[in-house]
Image 1 (tube, rainbow, N blue to C red):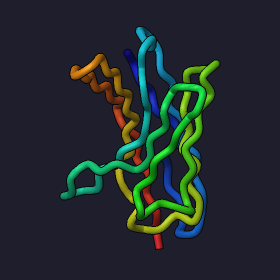
Image 2: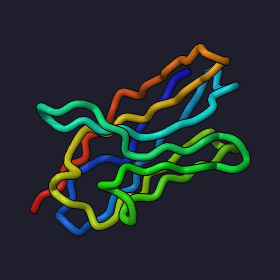
Image 3: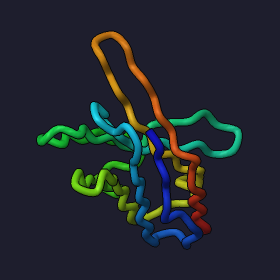
Length: 120
């Protein structure tokens, strides 16, 4: 499975960015996809996830609820992260993640990351 992110960049506080992540390869049985971020000197943290079934259940970190929206286009095997009302503390490298789960076995896939910089 290959995950390729795009859409990062620099924006002023209050602005918006939209990230995309395209999946290719053996994408069959990916159960969920999502976005994580890692700021300098901090651990990688979950931003938002979405299931790949017809329900498309979503989950958000408290810090981004109401500002970020995750969505998917299963026909394109692509997920998106619409980020509005950006804050300087949202500055980080954003990573796309894919999860395959077979019973108790889980396989994680990561993109290369895309930088998001929010200036005050």
